[in-house]
Image (tube, rainbow, N blue to C red):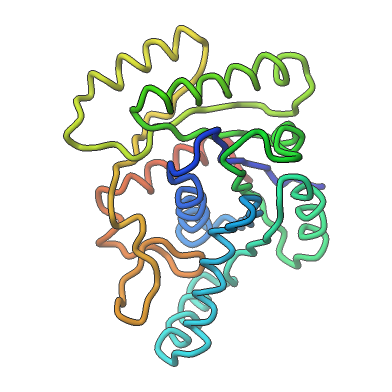
Length: 253
């Protein structure tokens, strides 16, 4: 291993958009910010990010339009799409090491999309080797309690004892309904601060655009492992601010 930074998006709750956020952050930092990234998709068996890459690759192979668009994009950013490796929590670190040894252009950030439960084999061991962990949560009492339970357990049992190499663990709000009052989040954050945990300042909205994949019918795309996000769809998504806040924390070279 050299200077790459291992970053995991992890939670005890499924269905909170963890894989989508992983793909969007990776896309923004790779395509828009010039970082070289890689994604280890450990969320078996669904492997949402790896499946998205396969669907996109098939669409590009079958369409002259998308093929030309991809070539133009790669020429513009002077590199290829970032690697997406299908794995599982038990084998993720070995697969990451193998990928790093084989890739000609070494990624400076390796994102791990973890399973939505700590009970999967290898999850805690793999998380203990992350440099940074970001845990999504929504303003639902069960989700918040579950996320806090995970964060406190990991901090107290692994980080403070030196069993984890993790430098920072951060929570962040996602699926934020614009109709909800900010006061609710502020109240939660007061409690979280009292527990000595950190929350990102960027709150990601609950938006249908987050699920806007590449398709034959649509020319503009938001969630993609190959193409950058459409500029018009980026507005109001919070992804730029979110990704840059993460980059400011992990400080990739």
